Image (spheres, rainbow, N blue to C red):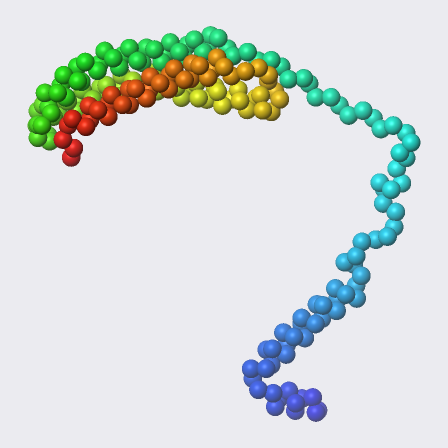
Length: 187
């Protein structure tokens, strides 16, 4: 009964603390006393292996295959980039003429709208160049990964050269488009 009186005399705030402390200590006692936390000292299977007998030879992976850059694919993308550049050059003369005429014109005026339409047509005309560059980037990435994974050998020189030419064409197109857009009033 004395324990009951001592518990009743305890302030209300100490009761949850005492309960938590009791649970905590039981958890600690179970971890220490159980002995399950330590590894067994019994022999493990690897310790009883026979190291005198040679192990089976590991399987040899297939050697990396030299995958030359697909010349037909590269030629197709290079031709696509060239066609895009030719289409862009053809449409550029008209866009430049209309942009020059609309230089200084008010936004939404007829000359300004005609120049904007010509610039939009110019951006559409370069679609082949941009698409070819994206395809060459994908091809470059796939081959780089195949070489890194050991699935292919060889170089990326042919792909890199075609990619460099397409990138130069697209960059030049971007610069020419930006120059035309800078001549027009912006909304």
